[in-house]
Each structure stands twice: as structure tokens, then as C-alpha cells.
Image 1 (cartoon, one colour):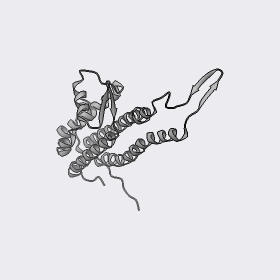
Image 2 (cartoon, rainbow, N blue to C red):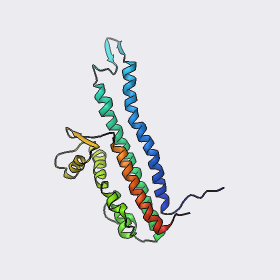
Image 3 (tube, rainbow, N blue to C red):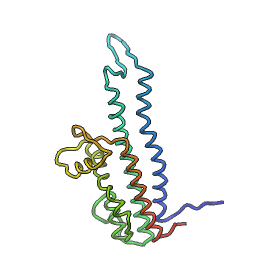
Image 4 (cartoon, one colour):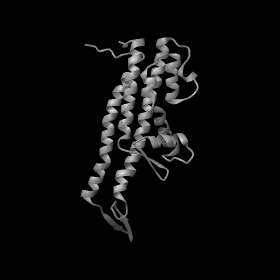
Length: 218
């Protein structure tokens, strides 16, 4: 039996939802990795080697703050890198949705013709050009501008936030999953699962209005 893959505007949404499930598993593994590394160090100890009159220290609690290193610093770096990948892939799926909507609706105006960038421009296109209004663009959109600001902190500011960045400061202060210490933004363990959950709600809402307008694509 040949199973046809959905085509048209619904395809990028289905692909995004499938990827969301995979990413949830990846994030779980990511959170477990630092704990595993810390456990290995605690159980296996370290070695100090002397060679040619020079001493090379392994990772140990006297030369490194291991608890902070493996509970805060490295996990935060991993989450930031994962967040950039997750957000970039999500944007790619939504822009592909805009492209498919333009084809299905025979719209002369493309998403790239609009002012702005990122998801804000894609949302405007789907609302203003395609007329795909719904809860996805309102209640389910509310946190996305803040996600975008946090993304920019890591993409353009190397995880640092400066005084006077009012929008970024407000978004960081409002999130229970983001902390700041000495101007350095850290993503807490609940951040990535929360982002994926909100993305899934957003995609489910978009799926409803896309199916109503363009069908299931099979």
C-alpha cells in the first residue's frame, strides 16, 4: 500500500509537529547529559600528571568549581545552542508555510515582500495577506515576541544583556525559566520544554485554520 504524504500548506505544519516531538526527546537527553558527566567525575575521580617538571591538573574540586561548572555553566551553554537550533528550525517551517500558502492561494505578494523579519513578518503575512485569523495569532502568540528577544540575546549578544535594553530586560524578568547574573543570561532546565510546548500549541492552532482553508492536502 502506498501512503501519500500530505502536500500544500499543511505539509510544513505536519513536519514541524513531528520535529517538535523529536526535539522533546533530544531536550530530555540534553538535560541528563550534564548530570551524567558530573556523576562520572564524582565516581571516577581525577588524575594529576607530572611531566617535564610541569604539573597538569585534571578536573577536580580544588582547581574547578565542578558543581557550578556542570550544574550551571555547561548546561546553560548547551541550552542556548539548542534554543538557537530549535528556534531557527521553527522559523524555517513557518516560512515554508507562508510559501505554500502563497502558492495555494495564488497570492502575488510573498512573505519576503513585507517589512520586518522573522516570525513577526510571517505572522503578518498569514494574517494580512492570507487572512488566516485565529487563536494562534493572538493568545497563542503572546510569548513569542519574548522568545525572539531571548533568541537575539544569544544570537547577537553572546548571552549578555546590557543596561538600557528595556524589551530584553522585561522578557527576562517575566520568565520563570530565565535568570540573569552579572548581566549574563542563563536558561534554566524548564526553558526548552516550555518553548517546545508553546510552539506545539501555536502549530496546532495554525493547523486548524489551514485545514479549514486549504484542506488536508492528500
